[in-house]
Amino acid sequence: MGVAGSKLEKALGDHFPEGERYFGLENFGNTCYCNSVLQALYFCVPFREQLVEYYSNNKNQGDGDENLLTCLAELFTQISSQKKKTGVIAPKRFVQRLRKENDVFRGFMHQDAHEFLNFLLNLVDILEKESHKAKNQAVANGPSNGQVNGVKQEPAVTWVHKNFQGILTNETRCLRCETVTARDETFLDLSLDIEQNSSITSCLKNFSSTETLNAEDKFFCDKCCSLQEAQKRMKIKKPPRILVIHLKRFKFMEQLNRHKKLSYRVVFPLELKLSNTMEAADSEYSLFAVVVHVGSGPNHGHYVSLVKSHNHWLFFDDENVEMIDESAIQTFFGSAQEYSNNTDHGYILFYESIAADKN
Image (cartoon, rainbow, N blue to C red; front, side, top):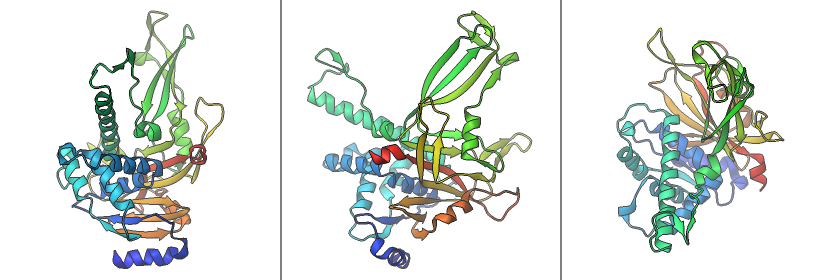
């Protein structure tokens, strides 16, 4: 990485962003799924800043309190406080803790980057809530019923909520009495079905398209007190600050009795307008990271990530970091033909709200 690091510094020259660090991550035997996601999360700047601040406030708490949140905060702090601008860091402590927390990640088998991202964000969310709770109890010297002066405390809004959480509304309309039943649910990412030669916009339209419930799938209408035909659709009620889109590239094929990778060409734009929301105006987003799956099947292959930092695009492949041209992003859309030599396909996309960026 010494040579690659110096190459990167030379390539950026006077444009190397002040205070920024570009470090590759060592691979501990098939941990590319972890490295690629960590790089994308590190360049989610608000999330990184919150973790670094958390580490500085909690670093004197001894090893007894170590968990995946403290290990992630320590790793991000370690990268951001390096004296050198480029290099390689071994995320050993984080990987050890990950394997301790979840036996799925213990072996040296190929793992799914999306599964890891979900596990990490959900666990960090829980651990941060526990950390808030412990602090509040210490301050109030003890009421454990979540009340202070008889007033029920609202659950803490975590960084995972602030950055990644959006709200979906599941609307079902009875075709007999026209009553609409709406149910809200939160999400940290959107998993989209994909089609050949499509785009993120069309995948999002399909995600929110109306589905008719009939025959065996009829809906129980509370007003009619019986099973009725109905129309159902999913809308985005509250778009998140960071929109994470997971393209469902691994599909179970019943005739083969196994998962197959869909190499379909799905165009993801650098600027995305979300129009299927319940808000008056479209929500505008800017692409800042892509986790790419390299390989022809779901049980083997490699993960790399593309990251935008200070208007430059960088390519992270475990220990190696290099600059790439923005025009190279389109080579990761997928293949227009079923059989192609190109097996590098965008798998998880990270978009940041342009409005949040201005605030």
